[in-house]
Image (cartoon, rainbow, N blue to C red; front, side, top):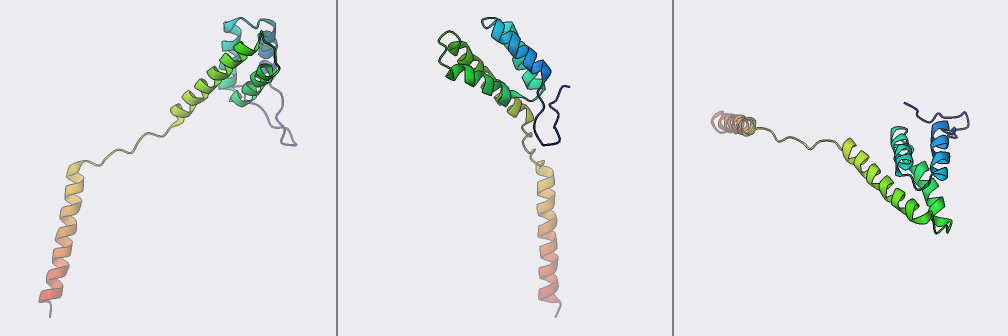
Length: 123
């Protein structure tokens, strides 16, 4: 996949696909398909924070025509990030079967009984 590469000075190198999609999104601001393609690429490239920053700049710029769409796209990024986090969530611990638990308790009781018998009757 197209993951951002790291430069020698630990700076991220620009993603040309992200830049091209962003330029296209600015040109066709009201086209949802372009924004969805941009979000999809950002998810695959793990660049959601960068995309959110770009939309935040548009939202904070005071452009009344673009601000509502930028807010809508920021909400979509939050939902996508949440879904990605839940997808990476580790599964819950499985409970041990009761038969194993009862067997372990039985063995412990038996061993303690043997030790108690040896201590009391071993003199």
